[in-house]
Amino acid sequence: MEKFYLTTPIYYASGSPHIGHAFAVIYGDVIARRSRTLGRDVFFSAGLDEYGTKIEEKAKKENKEPRVFVDEVAKNYIEAWEKLGIGYSRFVRTTSPEHKDGVLDFVKRLKEAGDIYEGEYSGLYCVGCENFVLERNLVNGLCPDHLVPPRLIKEKNHFFNLKKYLPEIKKRVEKGEIIITPESRKNETLGIIQAGVPDFSITREGLKWGIPYPFDANQTIYVWADALINYATALGYPAEENFKKYWPVDLHIIGADINKFHSIYWLAMLMSAGLELPKEIFIHGLFTVNGQKMSKTLGNIIDPLDLVKRFGSDAARYLLLSQFPASEHGDVKAEEFDRKYNSDLANGVGNLLERSFTMMIDYRGGKIVKGKVDPKIKEAAEKTEKLFGSHFEAHKLYEALADVFTFIKTLDVYINEEKPWVLSRGEGGQQEKLDDILGSLLFGIEKIIFWLKPFMPNKAKETEVFSNKLLKGELKKGDKLGLFKRI
Image (tube, rainbow, N blue to C red; front, side, top):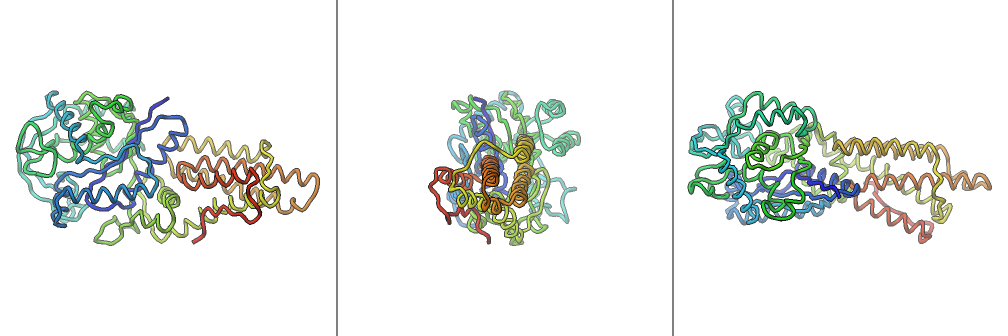
């Protein structure tokens, strides 16, 4: 069986999850589910990045110990992912003993490779970014992402010799030995390398909340170095059997804001440690809400659990993934959720399945003749299958969903053209034709269920159960599927 190791970012444990966080893990979950149906042995990781200055300061503001603070945040994330139906194989917490052991082993490898050296750094540091920022990138003296002035920091650090690996990374990315998609993000990565990337700090001085650096008692392992190693420790690196079985990563899913860290820093660290590199990095665009970046100050953060409460788990998943192509940045208009739910789910797939099943029950008591399918429906299904599969393999889930909903409209048009309700009142040949139409509709519905199952697993299961009861003659007139009720 082909193995498939899929990862999503681990998010800062600085607060509750929002739809930007949910988007990537839902994306990963859908790909993981589809991969399993194709016979792959899937390991899917998610988790939280729980160390660093930002976490320490957040906890202090709430008069809590950092450990208590991150435990509460982790509980919120785990609850949210459970209610969104995220079927991860392991939820990584960087404060776990297993992660710490793996990080220490990994850093030891970097040290033994001669790629860590002591130096001094002076620069502007943004706590929100957990990274140094260039003065030319500030807007009115503020970090453009967090709108706070960075701190001028001068301290002794231990640095990673990144420049040693940049030529090799550039060569492998250009040759496609490491796939970075979409193409625009590959070009962005190469542009960053071309512009020159300095060596980066692998430790920080004076930071208490983190993993101690084993070669200098005054240093703590820098949050980015610690966090990136989670992709190995999720598999129990270095000793656990899962690491030997699933490594290397087949697909990293990350956001555009952390491209440099994954497509450059992480690859260099893996080269230094002597580990195989990821096969592909898929970089999705970022969310704005009503044209503005999500922030507590603006009050425009959307809690994914609020979507689940209003629309249900499967609909919430669909509404997030169908907003815009993941390869692009996109704007979410919160007031559009109701309209899209009604148009696509209640009046779209829900209405098609309801009216189709109702006719099957009312006209044939569920005794549908399977096997004979109208050529135009079969042709449309084959075309959709090809497009859907191609888009899915390219991680274009927005486009794959659009393929399915085009087919749904094809079935709606087919019903309106063939008018089964008229045929049901006829005799002889009309009844035979009605059997063919209902059989063609069932064929189409089974295809839709299969395609949508990774996106909406609960609703797909409900539909399968209802369909099986129908075909066994266990349903009577008036029985309804009730998949998506109009809001």
